[in-house]
Image (tube, rainbow, N blue to C red; front, top):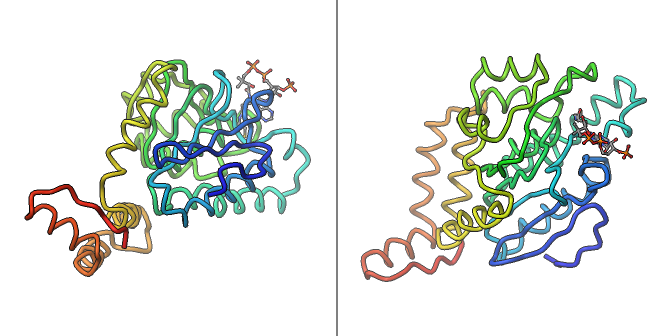
Length: 264
Ligand code: COA
């Protein structure tokens, strides 16, 4: 990763083998416009092939918002076809892309996570929220529905009943409720938010990158109606035995030393 990528709306910094991507449009509460989507995609593609990067953290700049949604001004005059494009490009470049990413991605939810912002957090593998965070899918207030995977991922995370309630009322929930409902893994103070994320990534860093990539693939397979998660698990479990990471992990255990995974 060229750490100083020429990006306008996001900053990218590698720290302790973790790429921290900060969405940086604080005066628009980090709303996701087309350019931000493109830049995020570009950074994700670069980091995928960078062996120095073991995990990613995505957060928002400032102390008010993670991301306050898709950029409403930008789509205000869209046609039916443009609306469909907006959704499908977003799915392809960011939301499905992150969900199926080969390295764990953590959302550090540091304030409002609304609409596309909550959808971004939900596409990540793990969510940590600061206690001032507010989350919701308010799209029906604008006469649209969540279009970046929210109708599907919210129900997967909090169950269908709570998802119906949040989407049809457009209500925001506070971080503590999000924790109780399983929408976020942890709640911290704003000051501790990134530290908590780094605590999680430090555990990831010592594990097998190949096994982690495979685990992400297999967990997601269970949520893909075209696949049988158990069958994918059997297949991928078998394949693990052919990797250099398996050799190293098992040898290290038997030799009572710390594994140094080659990552293949
Ligand atoms: N798209 C575009 N601009 C946005 C935005 C969005 N999703 N969310 C906030 N902004 C902009 C505001 O227009 C404002 O810009 P301005 O200063 O140029 O007028 C700026 O960010 C600050 O927002 P503001 O509404 O003044 O802050 P607030 O503290 O009064 O309210 C929110 C905060 C989050 C409650 C409010 O901004 C909001 O409801 N945003 C839209 C949330 C939403 O519906 N998201 C889903 C979109 S599909």
